[in-house]
Image (tube, rainbow, N blue to C red; front, side, top):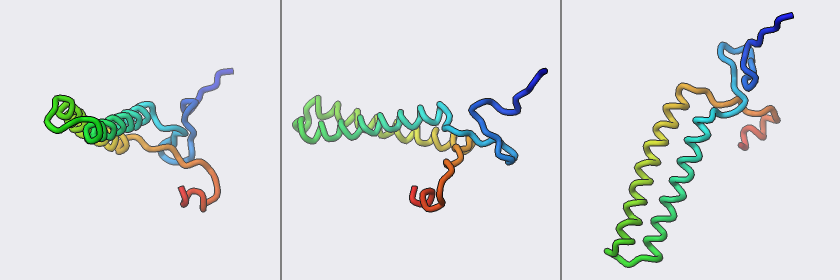
Length: 104
């Protein structure tokens, strides 16, 4: 007997016009972690500059250039993430009491 799946195994259908996914897509997760890493690098570089370098030294200038480059990159990746979110629905919240969903 032949059986056909109506949706991929990582997708759960919910009676809506589109299936709702159970997890964020790999691209959404990658964009999230790229932004997190860039934020950490930007934060670290500006405090490195503040605490460990003297003004107008090559290390100080390099640290601020890294900080600026990370900041611009964060802006670009956040924009890409927002565009991705417009066309790809987030997963449905897990089942649970309403007070937990509101608190989250």
